[in-house]
Length: 52
Image 1 (cartoon, helix red, strand yellow):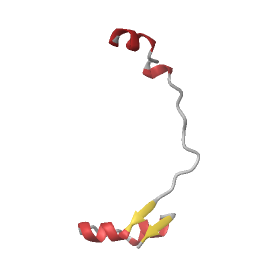
Image 2 (tube, helix red, strand yellow):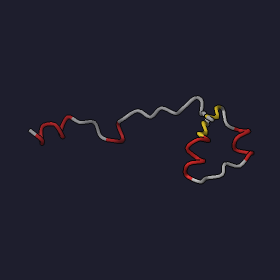
Image 3 (cartoon, one colour):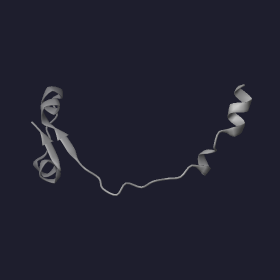
Image 4 (cartoon, one colour):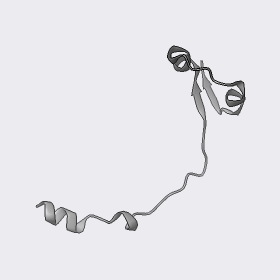
């Protein structure tokens, strides 16, 4: 059964690749504070969304 499934499974090189059309940066300040991570203001200004 396993050999049968592997024989019909597509190879990694045969799979189509899709590139993202838009990238978004989200920063979760609440979690960053809990972890003791300071997010630079330059990152916050570039972020598409900031979760307080």
